[in-house]
Image (cartoon, rainbow, N blue to C red; front, side, top):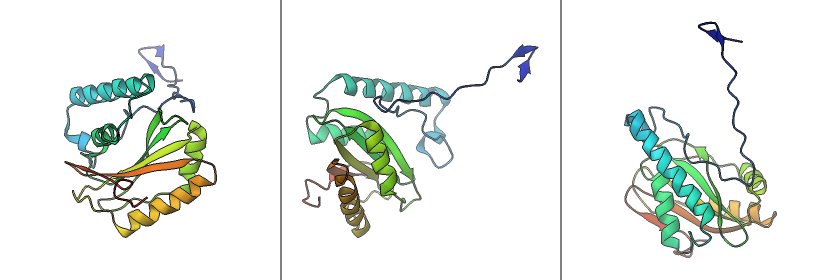
Length: 186
């Protein structure tokens, strides 16, 4: 065991998050490729605390995501400023109430590898009945690519085998969002 000034330092235990708990949005990477990298520690702390409060309010308010615009705004808060592509998922219960938000995959400037198996495992671990898929386009374009459309269909099929519905796939740009469900692409 390490010591500092003859005082033993206890090993830091990683906090295990139960499947029924929301995964906190804070703690995301602060590397040089993150929009958070240029922020001061105090600013990052303020953002982390605000997102933690928003997450707690969403868990307590069963009507928090009663409109598509509320979902889009929430996702834009999390993904709009990123310089790399991130694929995230909102996990919802049978009444479409918020269970958790999780950034599942991080990629490059123009693409992210998404693994259906990992998404299915996460949905089962959270006990989700439905999901809202989301990813950002750092380029700022909202138009879904053919790969985005194909991925959505693949994930929809994979999740249907475990009775999890895909409600939407939202693309987030710096100033706007696009709902694939509203465009009839789901």
